[in-house]
Picture 1 (cartoon, rainbow, N blue to C red):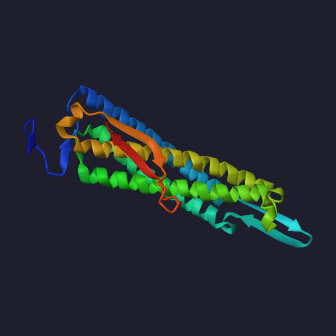
Picture 2: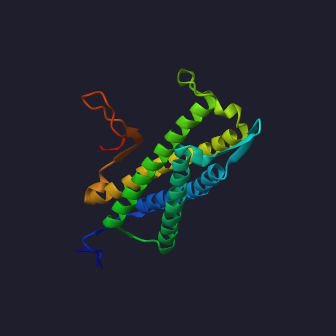
Picture 3: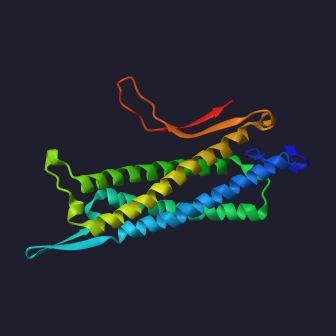
Length: 227
């Protein structure tokens, strides 16, 4: 198979059909690079803020030290943001290399790898923020029904730093969700062929919760609609 006299492998399709698509691709690449840099910076910040957080309180003659390893949700949050930062570093370098080379072809297998990686990282970061947020609420407000006291009343500095880490992790999770939508668009438009000139992709940057017959909710799924 060839395109304008240039050999193309079966797993690779041409993306740039005209100037407008070149401009669109460049804008998408720049947006992706910016988001990955944000994830890299804030992911490291969140992991450092939570991972280095500790506070010692003395009760009578007993010293008690609060640290992030006391809550498994915070351990998960640190690991998830560390993974997100490392993953974004690798993908950011790929974006830079692609922009420097000015690639005109896009490999379907590579697109699938990027799409799958972004989806997995989006789920992990969102789950980590949800788990960490729930633990933070219990620590801040307590749970009178179970006689769980308000831990933040005793470890205020510890809770404040965890809150800062959670805020950074929340931005990381939102950025990963947006990136997963971008990678989905970049992947599925490769299957449009010549119809891409007439087709319009509507990419919904939301996650749909599917409710089963028994009333339980499944994991959210990214919604992509072709109109």
